[in-house]
Image (cartoon, rainbow, N blue to C red):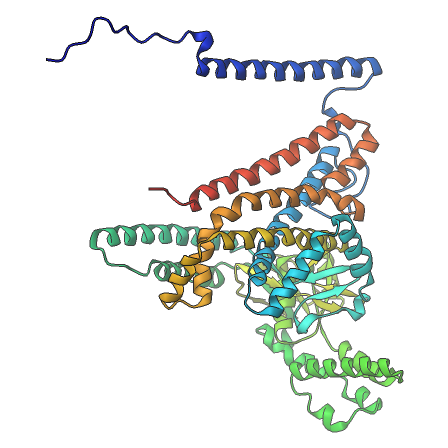
Length: 560
């Protein structure tokens, strides 16, 4: 039997003052105490100096009336408080940062992949773009985009419309199509949530079935089909049974739907006036539908541009174009309401020109309709019923209910010296967003390129050996593995974009810093406003970091 030698001493215990673990904890405690003491000294020093100089401490000033305007953002009036003004700036910062991060991700990914393309031209274009943009200061880029690009765009009446899309570029900014939620949107949103729950349930069931049987299944296809079926059913239900929208028109015109306005619109095309300008009679007779009128307008506009370039007289062509534009259907309603957006969009889809006469109340819109200034009065059924009762002859007017989808497309269109409808991006917002995206995407592209190059070439060779296409190789094999390399440095770029948005003050966009500077100057509470800056940007940065750290753990490779 083995025995322990009596001469062996028990292992000596390390004294606490020599234990590395204890010393490490003590060192951290000492560092924490020193930091807290330093912060306490700074705070105490500030309080003493503030008291000496008579500075007020506190945030009560946030409840004081601001008495200045803000050019864009959420609802705000000069009679609102400083706190509301700062909140408008914070929301504007969040808005440009959120859109900037999404667009930077898309553009950076495309550029990063393009730089690795086997096509020499595509690769060189991406390389030149990245190298130039990375070496241009962001502030210089913002000045260039704002003063040399956007403010040099043509006037509203000569707006640029790329590829004939419902996008209008002019000195007042950019106008795009948008989506407007209707009364059925919350119900449809519940269907979307239900669809997501169903997708997760089906995914879990199929995953467990795969583990049990060993047979693979197309989980993605099942999830997509189930999701589309549920939200499609929700869209149909909300469109057919949940609608409070209607329009009112003269009963004698026999209008039952928006398509019936086509005949009225075509009657308003002044054939005699066109003949007086010398337009070919055969061409006039060929105008049978609103699409024909719209196409002829496009041809005349092109001929006017060519004549201007050649220095020729365009007065006849311009008069013909004006005659065609005068033919329209006038819609009355409440400004930016779902009813007026839906009515204008429905008519524009039929290529019918629309003139919108909006007011800030249905009562004023009803007076315009009663005086004969409108062909259509759009609104909810109850609103129209109340306005119809006020007319001299209510029976001469008919209210037609209209099915309306949960989301209505708000399509922009030229109207005189302005663009009506759509979502408008101010020149300042457009320049800031474009500058942030263009600048940050150059750095994001290099991160994407590095992430792709970090994936072993053997992965690509194996993918090609399996017969996968280049798109499938990149989407299914390379990018998922590259994400663990891409996400950490990409997080830094997202944070840089958010903080760089403070340069908006240089081009007069009312972000947090621009609004805060105004509040600081008018209130005199400089320290408190700076603390709001610090708290706001710190919250945004920590939120972005927390989300991306969580996502990074999800895509990280699991070591065996």
